[in-house]
Amino acid sequence: MIELTCPNAIQATPGHAWTTAPKVQRFVQGFIQRWLQSLKESCGLVLGTISLAGLLACSSSGDKETLTVFAAASLTQAFTEIARAFEQGHSEVSVILTFDGSQRLRLQLEHGAKADVFASADERQMDLAQESGLLGGEAVPFAANTLVVAVSAQAGAEDGSAHTGATIHSLKDLAGEDVKLVLAHSEVPAGRYALTVINSLADDPEFGPQYSALLLANIVSQEPNVRGVLQKVTMGEADAGFVYTSDLRSNDNILALTVPSEANVAAVYPIAVLRDSAELESAELFISFLTSPRGQKILQEHGFNGLDSHNQPTSSRGGNNLRMSYRFAGPKMAHGLAHGLKEG
Figure 1: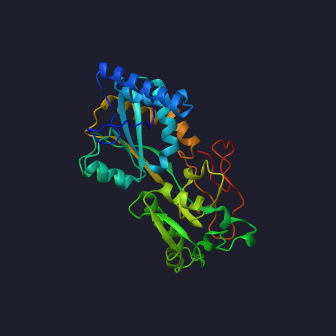
Figure 2: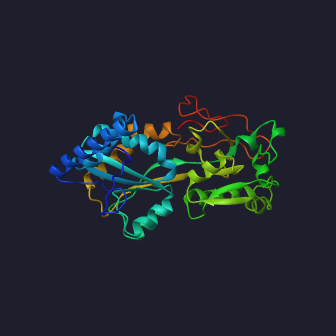
Figure 3: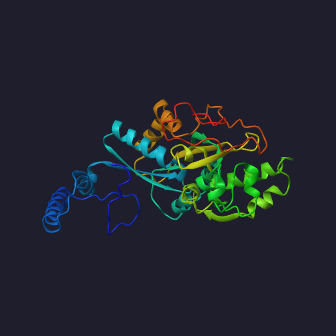
């Protein structure tokens, strides 16, 4: 069962399953069943079999190995599907997923958090994990990503008459007045990549040397991870934000501006087994599955590039041709992404 962390009053380490002796397990299962029955009778609650199964799994998860995976927030949807597929082929393993900014995850590991696998959104955080002695082997690259600018539906609407805030139809508009821009924190890979892209755009004469300063002056928030950036834009709390291409794969309420390939980044995602892993064999199997054709196919379906892929944004430089003329229509886009953001 994925992402089910059971309560443990004695050991509070996130991600560890509750293991009990068989007799205690039977007692707990019986107690839960009686408790659910009493709720149904006294409160009229209709509790489905899924809820019952989820609660009972807490008491029986000790029958399986627990593989704890710390992964960058941008991997949330892809890794959830990958973990499910991995469990189907390895019924003896239960995968626990924890998502956050890569820098935060590394710091948690350095301060004693327990996990078996670490997947970062950049090589820098993995290098720092290596320097801290956290890794149990060599890190393996498994995917790549690029940046786009997510724009709220209000700010990107072609008819902005009903919108009192900023109107954003090009990268140049990001430096305009009244724009509310959000980035991931500069210590997080997505934030560091965004600053790199902004500085690269400022080096282009078409944007001009003042572009960077004007754009940075519009930042209203720096989020702990890229999912926080996307959430702010989706809810209309910000007009725009730099996110990964994969983040917009399944979001049909956000418009997007592509970044010229000359100014974009190639974000490489590495993964490694952790030195203190309690499930070394399962951790290695998980990484092998991730880098297998099936694992790579799942990643590509979620908007990531494989490391052997040369798909990059191909928009030419300049602001006028980077128009908000398309929406991302969901996770099943069979024909790729418009304006050069091709599938895979």
